[in-house]
Image 1 (tube, rainbow, N blue to C red):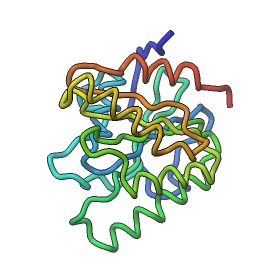
Image 2: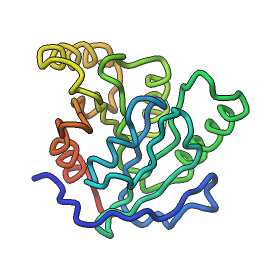
Image 3: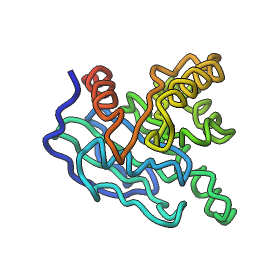
Image 4: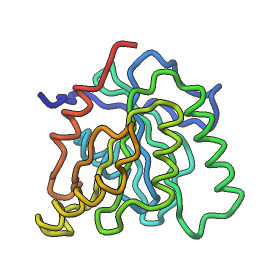
Length: 199
């Protein structure tokens, strides 16, 4: 059965390990390009309009944001990557921040990576998948904005993506998702329910 989220609360923002909350709950983190709809996906999964901050300007969020779900699961929204107008010093800061998170956070059980279904998996998405594979982190590809394409295009893109990423052994799911019409929400919640473990 899908996870039933009854409670979702913002815990804190952080930029380095010393600022993280305790790592006592199974943790799912959300990644993706700055314009892929990552924060909107998190909000829709939690059924909260403004739990994670969304912005009209991609690349605006530059903090790691922690959320407590049902008092026994942790969600983490990491800064988006790949926005063309992001200054080089911000890109370096992102790399340092995310690498530190992956290296020090021992309670991570899975990643959700948002990929705009109209754009497909890009080089930076693959770099993120490689990072997770190096850290033995399970990954779920979430093809966002699925309301923008036809059902046949959704099916075709899923097959194309699966074939393209066949060398990655850490990918567990490739699913479509729409924060607008709710496509894929139950699937995402089911993945979380089936993946969470006791820490």
